[in-house]
Length: 93
Picture 1 (cartoon, rainbow, N blue to C red):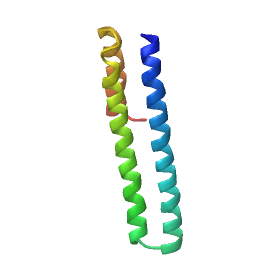
Picture 2 (cartoon, rainbow, N blue to C red; picture 1 turned 90 degrees about the vertical axis):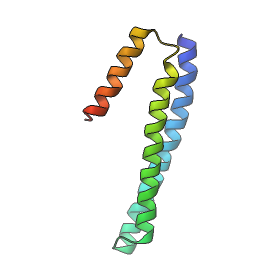
Picture 3 (cartoon, helix red, strand yellow; picture 1 turned 135 degrees about the vertical axis):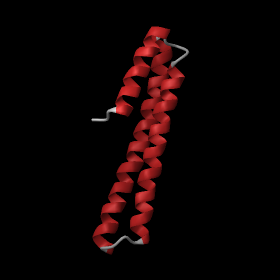
Picture 4 (spheres, rainbow, N blue to C red; picture 1 turned 45 degrees about the vertical axis):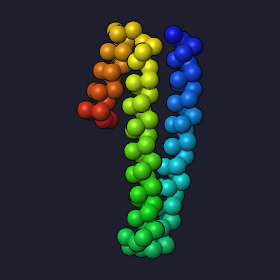
């Protein structure tokens, strides 16, 4: 179980980091566009769209990660993990 989960975690970590980098880059683009344009310009809209796209991909990746672990975990382990995830979605902090 540990080795199977380790492979899944490593893959998730790499993909997660790549999406975080995309979000960070888009945030920098947004900051530059706001500073330069001073209004809700095309560049501001494009940077905002990139941020939202990457954030959506990150959320999908996280949910896929949850379901990818399901067959490896025991029912009790999966129920605990599912509860943690659904509680976080209901009550983000």
